[in-house]
Length: 196
Image (tube, rainbow, N blue to C red; front, side, top):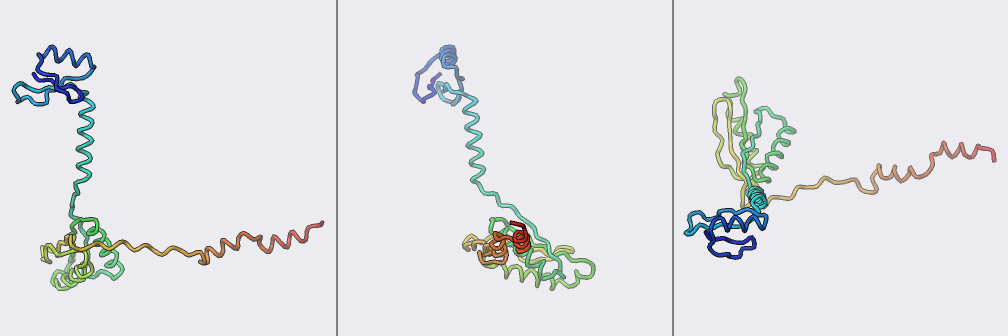
């Protein structure tokens, strides 16, 4: 068999007992790396360390590969504007993260006879996120649910999330904090009443 040293240097063709003896002297393992070669190729290495490094490489490659999942957001035909805005913001957040979003309108009772209400809501959602998403599957009625699938638009540049305004230095809370460094008037009157 052809033997390779731990540093990658070719040690030539050796018999199995000689190769094993060499590996034992270096306190390492003899690993067959190319069994189909003629003669087979073996390498002297620390097998546990090699296994660990391979696991780390696989872990890194899994981190780099992006996983796209389908998120779902459910609406009702009689949804209020506050709920609609909150849910639509969440849909936009999912799309910015690179996920597909399945939007479902759930009909109850006689609502199912008015699919135009669900279609109107789906149109409003697609209009609200049209800068960052495209409609992958148009609205369709499936039993008591109407569904639509949105996919992130790769051409669109996602907008940076707007930061909430923070209180300025001149805010009432800050002004109260600045005033608290002085002693309260009640304490001042007590200190003036004390005998000298």
